Amino acid sequence: MEFRDLKRQYQAIKTEIDKGIKEVVSSSNFISGMQVKELENKLAAYVGVNHCISCGNGTDAISIALMAHGIGEAGGGNKCDAVFVPDFTFFSSGECSATVGATPIFVDVRQDTYNIDAVSLERVIKRILLTGKLRPRAVIAVDLFGLPADYGALKRICEKYELLLLEDGAQGFGGTFEGKRACSFGDVATTSFFPAKPLGCYGDGGAIFTDDDEIASLCRSIAVHGKDMGQPNDPDSKYNNVRLGMNSRLDTLQAAILLPKFKAFMNYELINVNRVASVYNSQLCGITGLVLPVIADGFYSSWAQYTVQLPEGVERSVVQAKMREAGIPTMIYYVKPMHMQEAFAGTESALADCPVTEKLCKSVLCLPIHPYLTESEVDFICKTFKNILHQI
Ligand SMILES: *Cc1c(COP(=O)(O)O)cnc(C)c1O
Image (cartoon, rainbow, N blue to C red; front, side):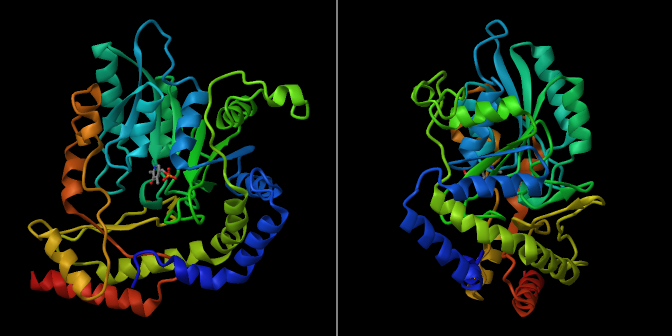
């Protein structure tokens, strides 16, 4: 059994994917081919925003979005910009703030949703304002494990303190909150097409979403060496670079692979993965001390992960070993709070008060989940998991 079975997915849509790859190879428009634009248009329409700007990966997408908003640039006296980031997330969410020149400040998450805790966020913003060393600029809200963050509360806080709200939807694509789709929340949103994400390609890829024409144009410029966006058909502006940027484009091949994958995602994968999650929920409920993922009213998850919290006293490594013996792979997302990452040692970012994250890092376990998992496989996983918990 695979943790996320990409081979089964390929078998299901092989004809279309092979055809798409062949078309790109025979046309040889490897960079910025027409499939890239077609994909961007379709993704923007699905998400419900004016602009989708594809790029090289989900990490670049966050950096480009921050750069387009001037986060991390010197200014505002000699104060460094503070960006508020959940402590329980993948490294990129915090890394990008630091690489663009800002200081990530880590905020605790909620034990039930795994997403940034609005109450802790406001407390930390007040602390930073009181200390006065940093200038609060942005909040990066992560849609962890497929579930959109609490955008109602987050928007209110960002408006109150005049902060940019960036949605890191790398794991959230396909989720919804109050009828709106993930990657449409906040001032700007990003996603990743890393193969294991809800919508993945066959390598690296990412995208930025925004309603703002000017920010969209800035993102496009930054993604291609800060090129002049003035006159797209003017050869003089093509090689005129008006700002420093990076080289971060989505390959035409990856766009061609994503087009049929996106169709399958919309047509049945999202529905199937939700079915798998509900089988897990119904079979695993009622086990003493085991905490299952909570999807509150008004939310819909794209289930990038199915993450449980093991009962207290249960040795996680033993559970993993026994599951492995039965042929079931499990993963731990995440083993380390962001503020304890060595890269931040000795910096302002290391000073965080995040007891929930620290507890989660010790107790979470992710079970296999993907749209091609059969009901009998989920059955087998649940029975095995329950037996192991009973034995321990
Ligand atoms: C995967 C991930 C990213 C980074 O995406 P890449 O495409 O791997 O660069 C950023 N944030 C979160 C929450 C992620 O899970």
